[in-house]
Structure formats: structure tokens, C-alpha cells
Figure 1 (cartoon, rainbow, N blue to C red):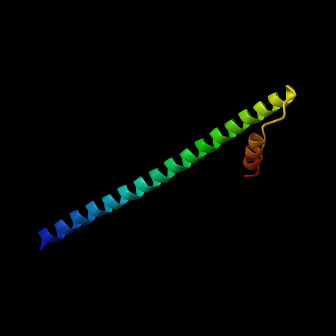
Figure 2 (cartoon, helix red, strand yellow; figure 1 turned 180 degrees about the vertical axis):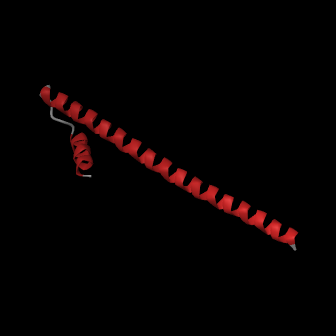
Figure 3 (cartoon, rainbow, N blue to C red; figure 1 turned 135 degrees about the horizontal axis):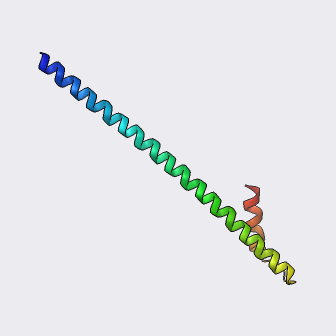
Length: 79
């Protein structure tokens, strides 16, 4: 009976470790997704600044700003 108890104890410890590993993997995946979202937002903000600079340049040269780009900037700034 002691051997069975020891075997069950070892199996339970192994199962507990596997559950901990799975929890850690889920947390790492969630953190990775959060980091990707942060980077995406930073790139979008940088792109918006570039588009604004382009619109200002067009306006300074006396050209009418591209309405598509103006709409894009407006949508991004509302969010």
C-alpha cells in the first residue's frame, strides 16, 4: 500500500507541476499579446503624426489636403 501511496503522491506532484506550467504559459501568452497591442498603438500613433506632418506640408504648399488622410486622422484621434 505504501508503494501505491507514493506513486499517487508522485503523480499528484507531477500533475500539479503541469498545471502550474500551463498557468505560466497562459500568463506569458497574455503578456505577449499585451506587448504586441502596445507596440501596435505606438506605431499607429507615430503613423498618425507622420500623416499630420504630411497634411501640414501639403497645406503649407497651398495644396488642398487629401480628404482620405484627413478622415483617417480624425478617426484615429477620436479613438
